[in-house]
Length: 183
Image 1 (tube, rainbow, N blue to C red):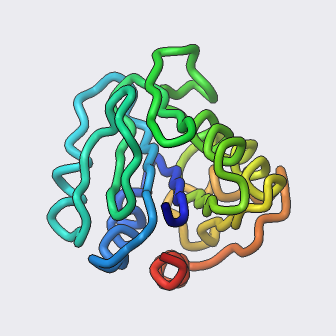
Image 2 (tube, one colour):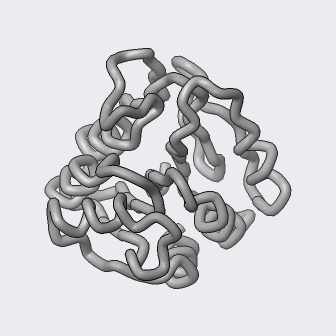
């Protein structure tokens, strides 16, 4: 199994998510997991990403085995967590007023996969993803943050920068190129 890429975004993050997913090559060895704050509303994010992705995209399912070269999106109103080799979904308490939230995904990925994890925090309100990204870095993973000046809603990137010192704060085009090169 290749790298584990975990991505967090909220308001203003759709274009950034699309750029990163579109940059992943068909030969991608990574497993990519995305949390976008949809709450309990239906999500068509997998359909949107499928339009430009070279990889299969779908909502993660409880107990689903993790496969390389696939993009998993957290389903509405469920936290997505990673265990060794599989996805786990739950309707636990909201984290940073969100479910799905990034911190449960990032923390479980870091605890399970350590230095194989690439964590990315993109545009959005609030501080979701900041603690999880700090955990990714503490466990030896790569921590990337969208440049707040570029983000439509810079709260999540700023929070990630303030909680810990990520490895880099970059424009999304550079994040996409870096992730594509790693995978």
